[in-house]
Amino acid sequence: MGAVASSDSSTGSTGAVAGAAAAGKNGHGTVRAEGLAEKTGSTAQNAEAARNEPGSGEKAQSARAAKTTQSASAQQVLKLAEKQVGISEGRGGQTKFHDWYVRSNAAKATAARDGGSVSSYNGAQWCNMFVSWLGAQTGTKGMGADAYTVAHAKWFEKTGHWGHKAKPGAVVFFNWNGGGVEGIQHVGMVVKDNGDGTIDTIEGNTSNKVMKKTRDEAQVAGYGYPQYRG
Image (cartoon, rainbow, N blue to C red; front, side):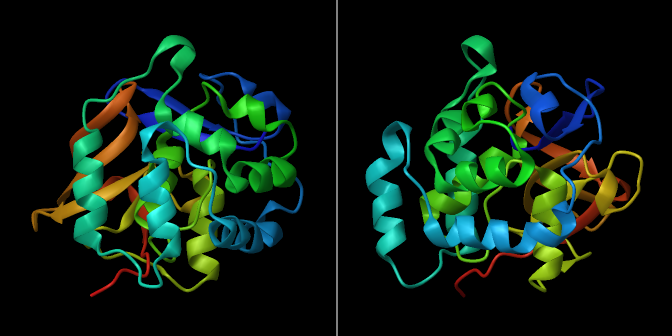
């Protein structure tokens, strides 16, 4: 299956897995498909351009977003993220974000990149699926779509939309050990830079649900900057 990565530092549960061995929800490892770094940019870009087959009750909203020629604003994305707070995993660790991702063209692209089947994303770590879902539902340009945090971060780097300043609506990538991109374990959305070395976020797959968190910036590997309107 395509690679996935997610973690909740408050519970100590982490995952950074790739390839067919990634089928388990709680898998942990750092194996990646050969040549991933070279393929990452085009895969994420193509997946975003193709958009998706939305699942759940957001089909009409996503269809409208796909037709618009103007990107969403950061405020629109954060408003949608706020509405998801409290959503938790169901049977088998499944969420509506999994349901959407396995139907999307992004899943086909990342599964082809990393090996395995699209169905293996069901019940897998889903923090990056949540971020990708937000981008798809709002029609945000330059958000990218992936299930693997390291690949998604590298795509932001390759497209020139990567940096180290917290901004509302930025995609924040975490490495709990304070390292770089290769060790990224989790991802979320920046709500606010508190100006005291911490940021407020909204994240999926945190204690098995969508949660608001306050994180130490020392745990941040970097930020991806979607091409928001305004």
